[in-house]
Structure formats: C-alpha cells, structure tokens
Image (cartoon, rainbow, N blue to C red; front, side, top):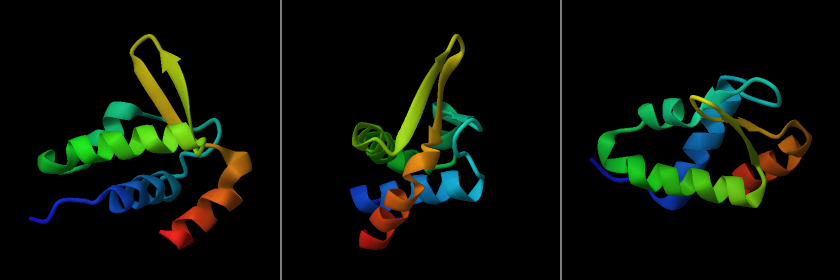
Length: 86
C-alpha cells in the first residue's frame, strides 16, 4: 500500500474533522483521529496534525485523559481555501 504524503495526510485530517463536524466546541481526541489511519501512515499523520496545529487551523484543549482537537470555526474560510490549494 502506498504511504500518505504530507499534503494527503493534511487533507485526510481536515476532511475527517469536517465530515464529523468537529468544529468549535465539538471535539475529538488526538488518539481517536490517529486510530483511523493504517499503521504504516501513523507517523506521517501525526506530523501533519502537528503542522496544522502550528498553522492555526486546529485548536487543542488539554484534558486530564488526553488532548482534544477541533477545527477553529472562525477560520473555516481559510481552511477551505487551503484545501483547494492542496
């Protein structure tokens, strides 16, 4: 099976969060997102997720049982433009 590239991994993450409507106050755990990826692609997806957090598209919230992530609702326009440019 072919491995994800960095851009494909970023597209997968954003598509997953949009499809499940993890926007704003609705969140999922960091580990839950990684669980939906084949084992040979987990490292690439983790790096892509960290990059999206650095770019400011994904917000994080620390809980005592893990990190929760969601898309920032006020940056959805920019996120969709970024998806189209990938």
